[in-house]
Image (cartoon, rainbow, N blue to C red; front, side, top):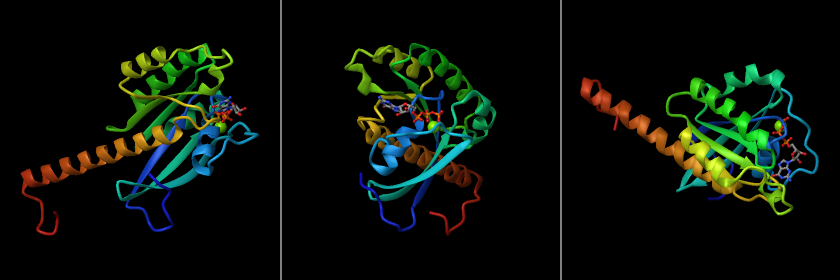
Length: 201
Ligand code: GTP
Ligand code: MG
């Protein structure tokens, strides 16, 4: 994968980050888009938005990254943003045991409100802190939770950069495959109904 130039993308995906305040959503997006961990990150108010372009298997992709505010008072508006998302990243903090419990609430909400076929990924952030004995949530706990909700799973560090590219590339591939599947099923139903014109291939 490489960062694409300015030419127009062949595919555009909407990706929404959600999770409690302080888990590291904005730091992760900052590192992914600008290549480094921000020294100082203020809590997000309302919503932030960034675009990252990439080339994946010779296809130019633009990822619209919507960074939601984790603070309780913004939760009602957050739902509106992921209803039409192609990808939803639900983040928790591996150094906070309570974080894993509250992430269930987010996953429940996502299951209720997400679009059909949206790709969901659970991300356990701040892995860099496990060396100092800071880890409170095991990899297995995260993995089990992801399986329960049929979500993809990665542990990562917005600070060290560990698994940032890997998680986002994996998500981009999944969203691409999902879009292909949806297009095929539309074409298939057009074929069956006899409505597919000569110009459509
Ligand atoms: P809200 O905007 O309030 O929802 O929070 P957020 O999820 O966007 O968290 P943010 O990125 O602002 O990070 C919160 C704090 O955690 C900041 O002090 C970051 O420096 C720190 N932080 C974020 N990611 C990591 C990480 O991977 N490792 C470590 N050690 N600290 C991190
Ligand atoms: Mg933030």
